[in-house]
Amino acid sequence: MDKLKHVFTTVRSNSPILYSIVMIHFIMAAGCIIGLLVDDRMLMGVNVWIKPLKFCISGGIYILTFGYLITLYPFSKRKTNIINNIVSWTLLIEIGIIVVQGARGVQSHYNQSSLLDGLLFAAMGILIAINVLVMVFFVIETIRLKLKTSRAVQIAILMGWIIIIGGSWVGGQMIGQMAHNVGVPDGGAGLPLVNWSTIAGDLRVAHFFGLHGLQVIPLFAVWVSTKWKTPTRNQLIVVTIFGLLYAGWIAFTFYQARQGMPFITM
Image (tube, rainbow, N blue to C red; front, side):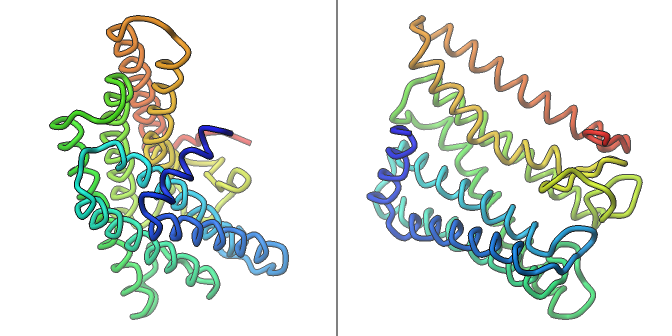
């Protein structure tokens, strides 16, 4: 809990605007939970508030992670503020669109049933593309610069950026086929909350694990560097192996989905 408190405190002191946008995401998530309790409308087999809830939580976690990680880079205050504003505002708009579409009871993704829906979907694609470019920028900067952390954690952050780009690429695959299921139309039987298909392949599985590699791998590296008193070389080897295994897991879930196989059968 102390480490989590440190993250929130660091982000709030270094970028109050970004921190406020993180809080807005969590407030929207709370609103979605209320929506689940009072609104029984369904869309493609699930409550209309499920998808906005997932994106609000995931978006808030990503922006918080980003806001903390950028403090480890030797950027000027001006450069940091510009990047923070680009990431936090674009994602707030994108996830705001998802919430609005959920409140309307219509799909946010792959929806071209009207001019408005098509324009909103296109806008979401542009906003995500901007963030992917920022991710590529951070891959370059993480290779080029010495971060204010241990070498093992820096390698983990680098792998996290690379993997999240891979997860975004999987998202692009879904856009390319205008669906997330493989083998059946979207909207069939799925796992609770995440709604990953239990009867066919679902690209959202690999997308999910890819997007959260930026938290999983660095957290593992922090744990290794603080709990395992061993030479830096050993820490680097263990963190690298873990990152490769995590990437391999994502590749497996992507292959599984492409073969039309469900992640879990129920």
